[in-house]
Image (cartoon, rainbow, N blue to C red):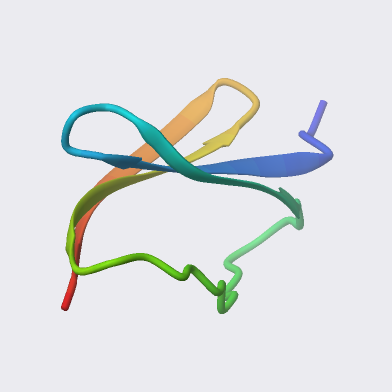
Length: 61
């Protein structure tokens, strides 16, 4: 079955959770703007949908 939502987590380099959002899931390729009010630094952004996980390091300037 398809997941009903996508979980977004943003963690700092010490592993502390700094933001968490639940986004509606949709089939196919999707694009979405998200608003994150974060101070400058490096973060790990993770998206989880069901048993799938995608993580990417991001730099906020």
